[in-house]
Length: 81
Image 1 (cartoon, helix red, strand yellow):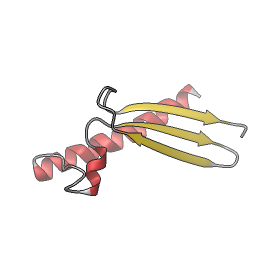
Image 2: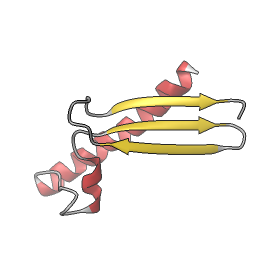
Image 3: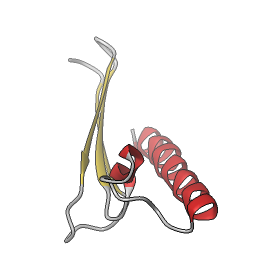
Image 4: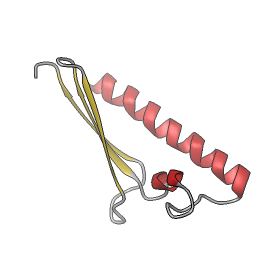
């Protein structure tokens, strides 16, 4: 289970970091949500990832809580729904 959490954490956090870097390179800043729908991944951004094997379900819940660390990742997994 810990390996799955680390795998998904590196995937999701890595994608967000790459995308933020691309936006900074192209636009010199990250757009706000009002400027562009991609602004939803702006700082601070936390997310919960829920994975179930049966039935196979993935659920991603995102938050923008200023008092929580940016890119905080929580992983929950169920092998027996």
